[in-house]
Length: 94
Image 1 (cartoon, helix red, strand yellow):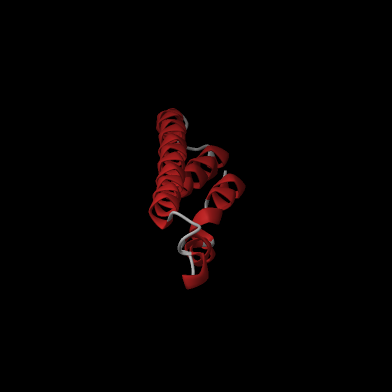
Image 2 (cartoon, rainbow, N blue to C red; image 1 turned 30 degrees about the horizontal axis):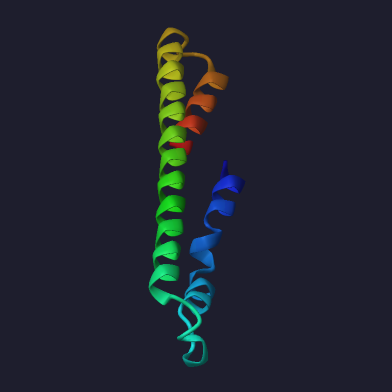
């Protein structure tokens, strides 16, 4: 999931480039509709943020569910060190 999130951040990481190519220079003012291209850039940013937020929340939800299950198992088998280690690993993810 970290690789996927890294790819999804591309537009944020390249925002200066995106702004420079979206806002026309003086020689291109009449050829490009700056208002429309800015709206498109804004929409693509919002779509990327919404998608990324949805994925992160889904990941948190799934991992929290695993933590809950591991806690329940841990209460039954308190001497299981492997289970404790796995629980801590999952808690760190959250």
